[in-house]
Image 1 (cartoon, rainbow, N blue to C red):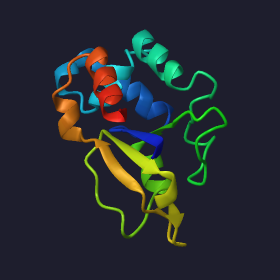
Image 2: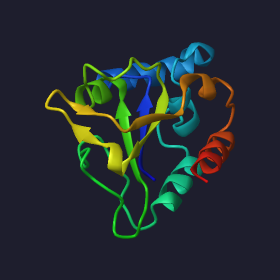
Image 3: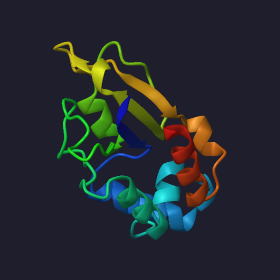
Length: 154
């Protein structure tokens, strides 16, 4: 059973990177590399439709950020799926493992509670591709992203 979705943006963390990404969205949106960023965030703030969806998945659970959860977390007391949002540099640091495959970003990974473990070399196992970078290329609206996630969660 899926207990966590890990959303990994095709962008690096940090204020300077955020400013550069915002500028890129304004100056040359057609060449912007992060479809997940594009669908979930405007230039300056989170997309309202996405925010409502994100909150609806976890009505009683504050969505996870890169520093508020770790790989040992399970569904909360209300059986909500944990949502974790990471930039690619944060993901590579947190989930690094010599056995972890190289991913194309953006990507959404799913974690199954029974498959997660830590081998001493970083979190490992239990991560499956929920939506690939190729899947994102087919999406053009936030509504399409939301529908795709809902369909795959069923």
